[in-house]
Image (cartoon, rainbow, N blue to C red):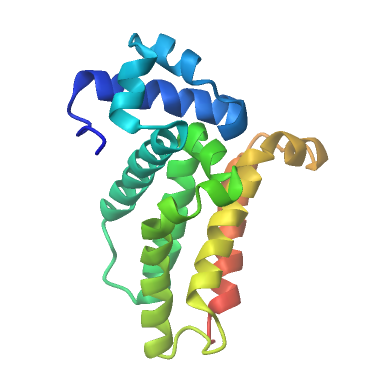
Length: 196
């Protein structure tokens, strides 16, 4: 069983592993590098996490927990589920934009999908509530839509440099490309699911 992350060595190992996995991907990450960066020996790393995969899962669990805590801390407006969906999507984008390592971990595809299920589930609940109230289209699959929203955000943040080269120059008084993308992504999802 992995140690509780209140253990200083375990915290250092997970922090070093998060950096290594985000930078090099699962396949490219080296346990030797992680141990060295964390200031521990490789045997201790394996004692705590048993394998590279176990360490990767610990990193994903901690990262997903951070995203879930960020979303749980959102002050929800009194409005309906579409208002709360809009706010949650914007907060999710902001969290991801501030945490590029999380974006890199999510972008690794099937290795990280299940770890981020709690964040997706928060969107699923809002979409299902909206369907129950007739505000979200009945033909919308809440699980698929929530995953698509996350992919839309991660895709942009992962490819922001490429998108920026094709975007028109901004006037001085215009919001940044990232702000425009966030607004457009949130609008796209909310308009796409709205029953109105």
